[in-house]
Image (cartoon, rainbow, N blue to C red; front, side):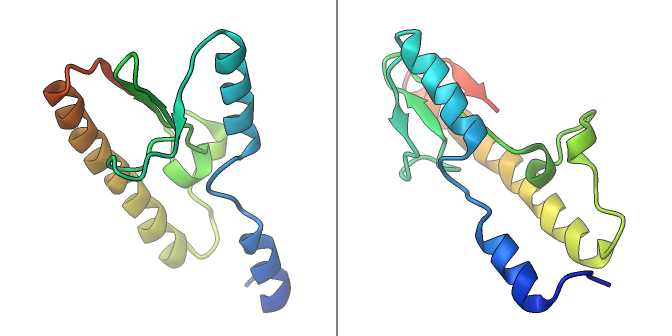
Length: 118
């Protein structure tokens, strides 16, 4: 059972961002200060990559460990409560990531691209 009310939980979940997260801003800042130039969140590409390096024909995803279930990461573990809710949701994210990366690799190969980093 959730320890927060529905209203409190809704407020917390509404503040989880999909763009401009702290890790994303940090990586963007480091890359930009190193001289790399990129486009943000290209919606016409599969999976809407966080960073697109047109000059280098490469894309970069900056994914959260929990939401994308990164293996061997302490933050990428399945929650112990409400597994019936979280397991299908998080596994669907992982499957969608695989499909998007496959599509992006095909697109990059067709455009002389280098690769995908996530």
